Length: 257
Image (tube, rainbow, N blue to C red; front, side):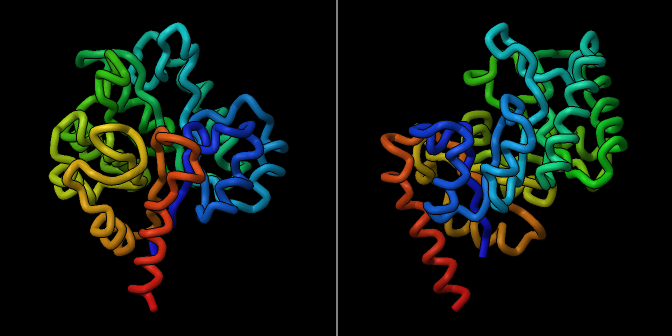
């Protein structure tokens, strides 16, 4: 049966952040992810999680309000990237999160790609017990973001050839970038280390866009150690919109029975 994680940055925002793991567990999620956990100390997160798996965090983005979106592909910000990555690795290790999404940042050109590859290789060497992910993001949501194409990400991953650096497949971004998210999944699923889902064309409850969520669940279930994370904007209250989770978990239980 696939494992489902709630993205605490977007879901359950009716309550304070450190109350959200409990709400996620009571709502049927098997784990959680959080984009940037750094506003709270590790000890507070440990109490809040109370044994619920934290499956993924992002590297620190920098000053979000000023336009920072990470530093891994920014040649002038190598020091910021490396300091931020070590902080992320410390949080992930202490909280048992096995995956860290390495944010590329706003950049372009061959020099940006060269430093991105160098920084990814460096980061993997610093954190041998973690899996690192890279995620293409669409330019409407993330203008100027360096990694904005799944084929580009695949080429970089193939060049690195490191089994601990994988692709973060997000249905929303795949559909926005390439139109056919199912084709993106089919082409790149062997590179995927983490899955995120949302509805399309709105980024609300998962479903639509010509993508079969039951089929995705079956294929994820056949792959080793993957989570499916719900990263979407609830149309109303989070709890009122969890019909998709109930349906997918019920279906998986019936298949496994």
